[in-house]
Image (tube, rainbow, N blue to C red; front, top):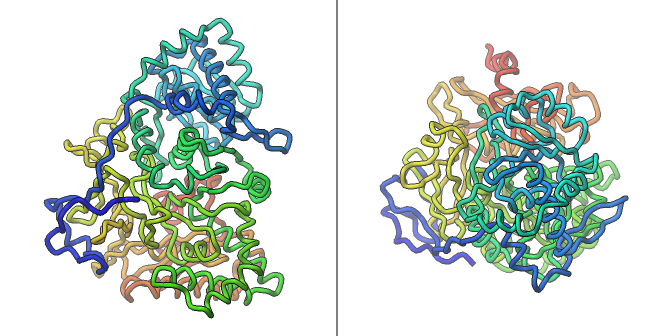
Length: 608
């Protein structure tokens, strides 16, 4: 459990149980919030395997999909494969400190290659498999990668297009890359590999993860072995129900190029939770059903999609009103857990819908998942209460690439819906005069690769990292994210509007895919809306669709003042996707790209 805050109350801070102080009332001169100290760990990421190997070599550590079936991989087998690939990389001339690019969907070989790269003191440079040739070129050239492991011939062609002067070797996973690299290292001795591994320290660079580039050219975040080990040394004891329970397992389907999935990969290997991989999102429900994880991780869009798909199907089957009542009951049941024991009438309704509805929804996540972790964007109170009400508690957390994933997290025994939890042990948070959250802790990155100016903007001399996110910390230390500093809209009337609150509520509608609130320097707030093509297959000009979107707008407006409310909206003819360049691989809207390409559409909303 997270312990009580170790600092005294700030002047003017609300007492426990009261609403949080407005962020404008916090000052950087105030004492930061800090939880109980957590000692940094020495060693490196290979120790997570070697420490468990003597007693757990025959334990199942991973499962890989082969010919449509899951096949178990023991920790001993995984270790032997990693060692063989590490030898091959040495034979190929990869030196300690070199960077090796890894461009692939989420799959078993991704994890093998990642650990093999670490084993010899090199650093992994993950690249999203959907990246364009231009994006690949930038990352390969900026990182100075000397080798690349890619998934397919399509990726190989993109790499060959790139001008990457340091790149010497490229292997293709679909063309037996693991076997090719292993064969290459046949003459490398165990002693040669151990010499490399034993030279690693907690300060050794483990990876360069490039930011998603929503606001400009991606920057390489330098994360060390110690950053990962500290993060997990603090997080796993806070989440024993996920990582340390008997039979713990998870199925990764988010991109391993993202720090969120990456930290779960390392956490599973470290704790012994069985780790599976799939990138087949179309058959995700089938894979979840056959794998049956005990916990899952996803971004809010996935949880929205599961809910909206179930709702749409219920209405198509003539059972929409039943689903709506079931959803309302689940939300009410969850809220009652926060305020006291649910009453007998509510418990009776909940038990009925558990048999009729909730079980099928749990089956969509594999049938055995009791817990889920959400990150990457705000989940929203409604979905958080809904999922807890059906028996799958979603633990929302907060972190960035620069912080090796989580800074804060709600835990099974310490959850406050609507917040991202309290800081992990040893992590400090403070709120600046403008409401920006800053954090300090050993999991915070050491800087941006070859970009001292950006590093100086993000990290101060005392190690505080400025997140760019606005938020507040209540009297009990729970952190609430209220918006993105650079995305705050200031209307012509001088009203500051945080778009995230409105956008999240509009996206909750079953037919809405994306929403972007606009109005900077304008007389009022408006919105661009895209429609989920799977949920709505009719004409986008249908008045019934417009009525549905208006309901979503009205619901969002109920959460804000009149001056912040959305007055007008437009439904765009095409959804925003990663393929058309408007979403990042982690489903964040590229606000700058949308505003650039839809400039005339935005202006038309405000034309008299």
